[in-house]
Length: 364
Image (cartoon, rainbow, N blue to C red):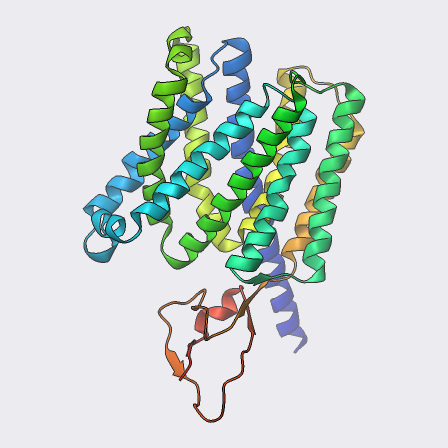
């Protein structure tokens, strides 16, 4: 018995560490995106956020949309478009504008404001997951979330102490509203992504985002940024930075659905809080940023919050007469007895691996 408990504990620790590690890979990719963007905008005066996003959507289109196009049956591109084209069109626009609003906010407000207000994505994801994905949280999850946000507050405080508040700081209210709008759209996009990768497929999500993202970002590029693109002083260094940015962005989009399916949209957004710290640590060597011990305290505080959040599974609450099975859509169907009046009920199922064998429920 003790051996079984030890084996279960070891397996649980491996899952916990894997979940945290996967989230940190995403944070490192975002760090790469931030560094290449900083070099492009500050060293080469290439302010082209829409064009940079457009390159990513084109890569998604070339890899994933073409994959859907050559598939057969119900997973073919045309079959998906016939059933759900307008939903993916809306999702593509949301994804484009979320990226644009947050990048645009840096022109109006300070870095510290962006870092703090960008955390608004966490309550957005929690609320949307609660009401639309029916995810239920335990007390330890909320404690972990609070600890992570405290870590972000510690980092923002360190920025103020060392004088690292880049950003114009002009029209600050406009900048803050842009960040809140972008964070809200990010939250919507992430929750939709979680639903799609759990119920459809990762390739379908990325293929549709690539299709509609490249189309609408191309229109936005032609309208809003074509003059900025002509001003770019093209050379091999700028080209290399665009390639590096696109590679990190493509890696982020391709890998994030894998991590979301393994964990959740909430866990992923908590993991991404460390991205600013990775950028800071790189900036100590590349941009001569000042160091504060509060940065290390912030980093480890966020990691502690992540471990707390990931230590326990979330649950899905379902009324079987209203909601479809969230996971295991191909499992067997079980008829409930029709005797007596059926009372509304809520069942809780863990999102861990143990749910793979749970049957569907059909009400007589």
